[in-house]
Image (cartoon, rainbow, N blue to C red; front, top):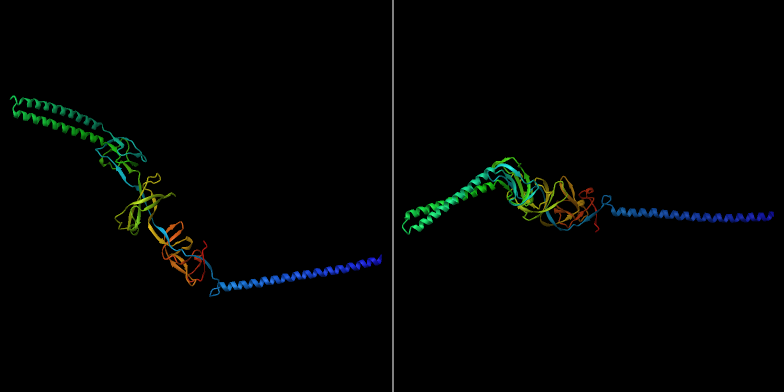
Length: 391
């Protein structure tokens, strides 16, 4: 039993020694492979970085930035003129006392109410004028009766002339009396018509259909032709904007040009058109007035302030996004990339703002490579690597 135990122990030791040796070999192989892989990655990446650095280095050894550029070309854009002004009634009709006046008996309308042509706005007491009219009407009746009597006497005398009972001289007197009575009838009728017209003018009426803007009279107030405007009516409810424009802008405008008006404090715009351009320019501020007609809308109130954009024709111009246009104390400018891949500052003048961007009316032909972004980090003369914008 001792011999078998000794043999088993010796065999076990041999097996253990061989397993340990194999495991050590495998571990050494794995470690060697890992070291080789790490060395390859380190030295390979360093070579690539050196190559990239050599490719991206500038003349001074620095990095050359990559900038996104675009060639804008030229696009047909509308030329818009921006201005401000005050709202007013297109035809503002002041309504006052047309007759001799008197005490106001009643006022029939309120501001904001629509009225028709000839509609009564207020009534002045007419008790005295009514009595005078009645008296003149009675005088007309008397004159007509006198005229009828004179006509009958003339006809009887005319029938008796042939018999010799009435002389021709008497007939002539009868004819003259008849003509005078007829004339007195016409005078009386004219006086009656005048009195009725005067009494009718005691009704203050609207000269045209429109919207009542102001009411400056109350019942019991005594008014006369010198009392001024008792009402203000906007004919047809039409409004307008009196836009103040520079002398240069007035030259480019034409009657009928479309416009968009935005009242102060409102996000809504209203379409209108230029219906009149001032024929004179103010000598102090060198500005003129363009009057823009607007249809009635309850949010357009005379006396309010509004801004307007007037379309004054169209033009071809490069259109750039807002990010491409820089600004400083010298004005607006962009950076363009030269053939030598250098950044060049280019002063520009901007125009209409469109949904596609801002039109550049001066400074660019449209064939340049314009830096879209990062212009604020460039300086004139910097070397750059241009990259076209992807659509």
